Image (cartoon, rainbow, N blue to C red; front, side, top):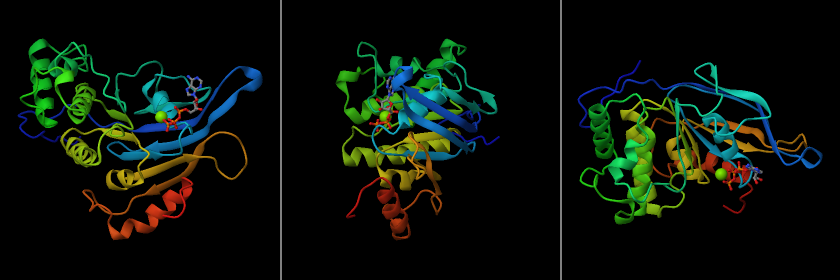
Length: 270
Ligand SMILES: Nc1ncnc2c1ncn2[C@@H]1O[C@H](COP(=O)(O)OP(=O)(O)OP(=O)(O)O)[C@@H](O)[C@H]1O
Ligand SMILES: [Mg+2]
C-alpha cells in the first residue's frame, strides 16, 4: 500500500485506493411500455489510484453511471464492483461531491466537513482529521465560518474536504468545478491533483470540459451511442492520456486528442 503524508500531516492516510469494475451495466427510465434506455452494457475496469474522466453530451447518463457506483441508484442489468465486491445500497467505500457544494448553511465549515467522517471515528481523531483536511484544501483559518460567509470556490473546497473525510477508496466527482469561474476552476484542478497525491484514492470525474479531462485524467471515458444504432449510451471510447501529471496546460502534444474528443462530443469547427 502506498502511504503518502498529507502536507502538514504527521500520520499517513490509512486507506487504500480501490479498483472499480462496471460489468454490463444497463439502466433505463420510464414505465415498461415506453421505457427509455439510458445506459446499456457499460463494462470497464478502473484501476486503484487511477483518475478516470467521464465525458459525454448532456443527458447521456454520466450522473446515472456515477450514482450506480455510489449505490445511490440500482441498475437494471449488470453491476458495479468495488475492490471485487458488488455495490448494494449506499457504499461507505465511496464519497461523492456534486457540482453544487450542498453544505448545511447553519453549520460551520468545520462541522460540514465533520459530516463526512466515518461513524467509527472518535471525537478527537475526527476533529484532528477535519482540521487537517481544511488545511489541505487551503481553508485553515476558516473553520468557524459559515457557508454564506465564504466564496463559491471555498464552499466547493469544503465539499471536497467533506468527501475526503471518509478516507474514501473511491472518490466520485460529478462536475465538481462546473459552477466556478475559470481561474478558481484551474486552482481547484491543481488542488485535486494535490489531494490525489496526499490521500490515495481512485477518482471518477464527470466533466463537460475536455481540457479539464486532459489535464487531470489517466484515461478518458467517452460515454455515448456507438454506431450499432441501438438506444442508450455505452463505452464509445476509452483513451489513455499521454504524459505524466502534472501536465502543461494546452500542451501541444494533446492537440490531436483534444480535437478528436471534441468531435466525438459533436463539437465541430474547433
Ligand atoms: N430518476 C430518474 N427518473 C427518470 N429519468 C431519469 C432519472 N435519472 C436520470 N434520468 C434520465 O436519464 C438521462 C440521463 O441522465 P443523467 O443525469 O445521467 O445525464 P448526464 O449525462 O449526467 O447529463 P448532464 O450532463 O446534463 O448532467 C436523462 O434523460 C434523464 O432525464
Ligand atoms: Mg449529470
